[in-house]
Image (tube, rainbow, N blue to C red):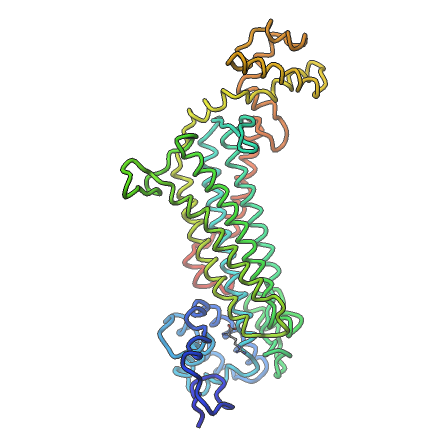
Amino acid sequence: MSEQQGKMWSGRFREPLDPAFDHWQRSFRFDRQLLDDEVAASKAHALALEAAGVLTQDERSRISVALDQIAASGISEADAEDIHHFVEMKLVDALGDLGLKLHTGRSRNEQIATDLRLYIRFRIRVAIMHIAAWAQQLIEKAKTMGSAVMPSYTHLQRAEPVLVAHWLLAYVEMLLRDISRLEDCAKRLNFCPLGSGPIAGATLALDRNVAARELRFTAPTANSMDATSDRDFVLEYLNALTLVALHASRFAEEITLFSTAEFGFVDLPEAFSTGSSAMPQKKNPDLTELVRAKVGRVNGAAQAVVLQLKGLPLAYNKDLQETQEPVFTATTAMHLTLNLLAKFTAALNFRTDRMRAACQTGFMNAMAAATYLVHKGVPFRKAHEKIGNAVRYCLDKGCELDQLTLNELKQFGPEFEQDFFAAITLEATLDCHDVLGGTARHRVQEALKDAEGRVQNLIDIYGKVDLGAQEASHAGA
Ligand code: ARG
């Protein structure tokens, strides 16, 4: 009798495993998160076995019912090596030897490849819903901002005034790209490894389309060696999440900066800030600081997987087990972060008075002033020079361009007329950027409507079913 009884591979062993090694090599403490996926994949395999005549219809349906019960009861402590072992043990508890039949014609190597695809496919949906919900809050905030203005920056030096809505919509664009990257990843991973066996393909004549169809995969994977060793989708997913985290970090940094007394553009919502145990006056931007740092965790996960996959020979290697934890860590981190960002964005209170005041000094209308001269027929290079001279003059005098008299202006060029002053007001400065994607007020109105439509579209696609219901049926998601 083998010492390894109760394991899935005991037959050939005579000596017990070293207990520390045994504990260490197991994955059950983390792959338990794959329970629903393991059950869905097992039910699909049972259907393929029935189609192949290995299980009767009655056996198959008893297996399916028992598997559903296992999923419904959830994880319990068990002496299981991994989630595959756990489900098999539970199935044998429920059905005796019939439970052992399910492993006919399959291998854990194809199971884990399938489970991970199902897990990530569903978490992509959840991530997309979270991203869309955050984008929606950014859009809502942009709407309430109306024609509020703020300085924009290049090199972190004041550049030109923009609508606050224009700035917020910049983040919406980033998020829409993030969603399309995740959708792309979901498309490419949507192939079913079941039937690949441990490496060379199942030794039963399974119709692989049966399981693929049941799990709503596009098709079975084409090569068994690739299917059991491929984790490209893991890396693609983590890289896509890295970009989400990166965009979140840029937003977080801007808000952190804008909440300083030096900027004073944002009042941090108290519900999302903390105080200092030492300095009684403090309100600290902990939320945005933590969000800024999360990309380290998420990209760390992606880096870990790169290094785990590098140089791996075909096909399955136990190294691949190590790719799971980075997926779980990054997924949880991003779902929680995005959820908070949506709430935080809704609670943000912009100091539009301070933002407007910041636009009124520092010659932020200089581009508009040069453009005025261009409309009077001055080549831009020369216009740039003339306005540059006027700015220099103002700097010495300690005033802004709109405080110069027409006579003073004429020293820099005969083209200046009385209408110059109307061309460099804050509103005119915005509206002269009248191009698609520019900050002219009517352009931003259009952009707002357009972005709202695109986000609503995504919410219609991904957000119809509530999250709880989706959790329950995510193998079909
Ligand atoms: N827990 C394993 C993993 O995640 C399952 C596959 C085990 N396969 C094997 N040949 N030992 O990689």
